[in-house]
Image (cartoon, rainbow over all chains, first blue to last red):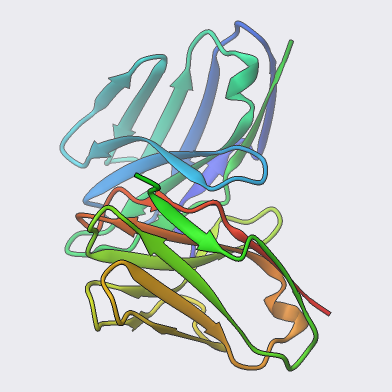
Length: 111
Length: 111
């Protein structure tokens, strides 16, 4: 069953603006990951944050994790048209190697 | 490095027909996964493998079988296709069982 729930389901912003997506999950985790999926393509791993980390950066991406609230956020700064895609969070429970996926946030960057 | 490849890319079947989807990875990964993705949903795990010669059921295994005779290949079989199996199928592999690398997907339609 799906554990992660992304919010919002869809987001449309102007190029150059920042985009924030949220993910909530239900059980304890070893780590949480964010993936991007361009239309009709496979998923691409963006960033992994471990349960003992609170924030992580990678280029224009910033991920936060609040294990007390069982939630994570993905911030994309200075958005570009190429950022148009669906973004998924996935959690890895302790002592497990299966990812549990959310339904995704569809991000549209308007030029 | 080709990464993760899937064949075929597209397939149309009639109800009751059988077929095999092939996934190959050249990264020497131990873990391999088969997912299906339906419109507006995240990924659902069908079967997975933690090493050559091993397979295990995921969230939605009914109607599918898998084999992992060689470390680099993971085959997904549909014994008697049903319209409910119309979906996009993704294969993924992982070195650690955490971060996953995805293939481009197979779009299957069952009439």
